[in-house]
Length: 297
Image (cartoon, rainbow, N blue to C red):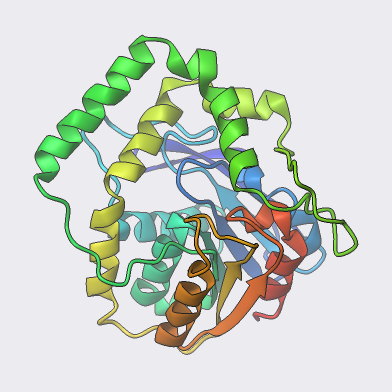
């Protein structure tokens, strides 16, 4: 692992795989969803490294990256530019396949539209979907309230006392399968496979709490930004939408895969379903995520 300053903020970046550090293999960049960390891709990475150079990173405040300045808020174009600068930092100047999970699906689609010459493929893993996004009301008031909430919870010691437990609980709540392979039976009590020492380092700090709150607060703004950015065409590269599917989706209905399929149609993408899988497809069905990526150039 390494730390690189991007915009004055130390970012944690990890590069693994065939040609890591030498640039001899095709590159894929993996970006996690809201409030998650680099190690959430761990089940997928060994399936990719014989064939790809794999780049992972933590956004400011998440994982092991330093926090953003107190008054800096995430924006969609800012996150797309961050992906470009991460690739620059590790010496990747050829087109890369960008892979975004959940909220990071917004970021990676934006990267593909803003940096078409640097995009070899786009894979959206159970990406966030907003068909008719509306801007937030009173964003300044919202930001002030979010900042105050973070200060209050951090001052009360919540991250150190409950951060790792809340992380573990959230992961278990959205998983549907133990994810050990095609032959693994359905597991009604999935677990969080991340080592506890990494979970503690990433989630027992106030910076991770503040970062997650900031990403959640600006989610609608990023969706609106992407809606406007879709006036720019996607590059002529393979695009895949990989949707999670279980008996019921994370909203408690059966409509989530349908929304994912409509997203694929809108993007002219190949549509795939990972089943049984909850929202954390990379943990439940890592082989399906790897297959979607390796089908890309």
